Length: 316
Ligand code: PYC
Image 1 (cartoon, rainbow, N blue to C red):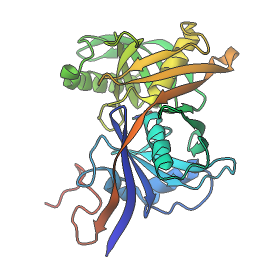
Image 2: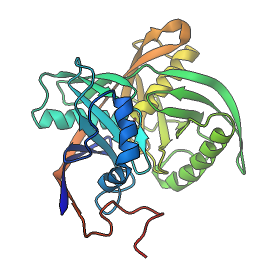
Image 3: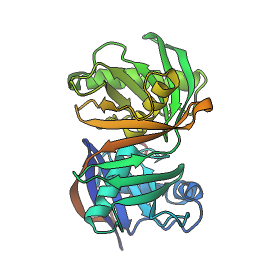
């Protein structure tokens, strides 16, 4: 037998998203926070089959389109990657909304999408970009000093933007495409040390440096959970950055922040207070996605790599 899974691929500022439209795991009904657990316990091999080799690549983020539990929402989504599940995913949300728009599945230019960590509201802008109000974001800890073996002390903030981040100014070298392998080694070491030194929840590390474009305020490099780097400026990472800027009084509500990613593409962010006393914000992030492919994944029972290729599972 061959399982057939319908998908549409896109990229947002360079970072790919695969929206699963039909034929994926049936997670039933109920809160998305429970459905994502069911995904992990009962269908985790299907997660790998849908995004990793030979049908995908480690960088690919999956977006399982579901019915929402909250009846005020237009749809639900569970984001996943090569190693597990994400709370929210900013570039993925933009890719999902652009996919729904091009498929004629949006009732209007505004929609509410439920995720396992909360509801996000998106707007299709007249010029083609997508803006979304993210889940509440905040800084949990400021100026945390982490001892990173063979690097030294690295100081940064721990913040939530729909996923957990450790955000730090760029230790050398400067952020550029040519030094990506070095950034990967450094951020992987930083994440291990951050996890061991009090913040096991952190699964993304964000380095900040000087932007190349005049219109940008900052450039970043973001390590994702599965040892891949975000090709986009990272929507949840930009949200975490806005939370830190807000907590420092370095950016006013409504003031624009243009976050450049490692490829030179950018997201624009602003925020409003959700609760100023607690430094909790609602970030709003704008970016643009382009569709790249549509089709059906085929999972043949006889295929030794029916469920994808993972380092701990080979045919030999
Ligand atoms: O845009 O939030 C994001 C994201 C998370 C991981 C990859 N992209």
